[in-house]
Image: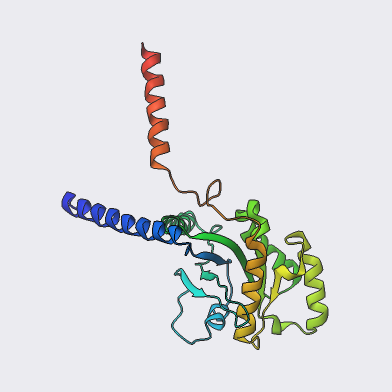
Length: 243
């Protein structure tokens, strides 16, 4: 890549960031900041997001895609964001690629002054021990924000006895969340309107408990100013030592 191409790319990115920051400031001033609820998991059916949208539109799991939750009984909303699978336990290359994708997303939303108020951790219905293992492999990266976590179990129609299975799950998953209302069971017959209502109610419930920031998590981006400060201190220390 030539120096000119690199410079042009830098300028374009800089202008785009300035634009996003301006939009974010506008939203903050007028109180129109977006409240986000992230759908996270290591592997689950894309039909969950399609059902939320109530559409057969083309859905790509490897992209960040948003949908405005709605409820006919309430004039409130969240933007739920379907996130790429968390491939953090795969190869080093896959892990770094995943982290970089999320860092870009978090930086973009920070510029837009968005508030991440809820984390939906999703997994398919299976044996209880497998469900717990799948949830843990995702929750461990967000452990300090466990108050914002909602557990979503999809494909619940696979359960032979849904009443007993739901009771067992509510009991078994208490190690992750303390309230039944923070566990959503979804089957193929779940109505789209009902699903939106469940997601919205759950998001509103936990949104009062804080806000997610990537700081001090595996997704924390490199702070250039902080890096420069550390390098400056190191340089001064070396210079002092030489003197």
